[in-house]
Figure 1 (cartoon, helix red, strand yellow):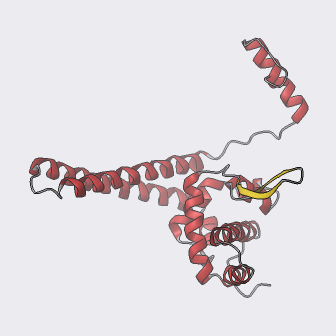
Figure 2: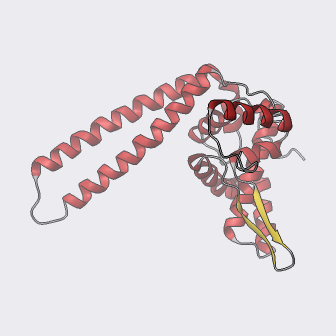
Figure 3: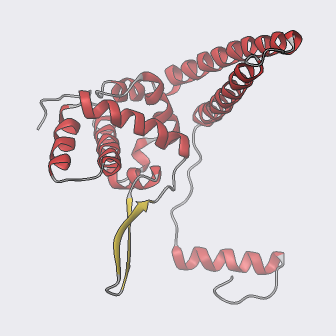
Length: 234
């Protein structure tokens, strides 16, 4: 509507713009995720929020207990809040594990078999992706996660590789980054790639992003072919 310089805003104008967009772009029909998958995504989002709250409370407890004079009642309430929050986090993790076992046990098992990926990270990836088969290839999955590199080019003066697209969620990229650090040490293919890139003087973050993408491609292939990780597979 902005490109067409539309100066009016009404239900009729919006409906016409949406219809025109659908006619010109012809996007694929949206497929809603399974109810259990949506529940897993909500539980994962809640877990992230609870963990952030836990960090804030622990930092506050540490800060309040440092001065020579402090309020014992305040510290006691903080201890109670932290204990209650720990119980909530534990219950949330149990519900998340239960849903993972119900909806996608094989997917989580396959992803966990990949060297460098723990069960918590596997559940997070499985919940974020949902159905791996909805992606026609691994490149689409990498793009969906927001870890694909971008290119900035204009004439002959501007030509450089930009940052990753960051189209995915911040938390899932953080989990993949931690998996990449572990994979660079324990995953044979990722370790070999990291060594080659270091020999070519590549920056450390570029290497980690490359390992993140390689791990995603490995996850995609393993889940699609229902095959556990085999380090000897050429």
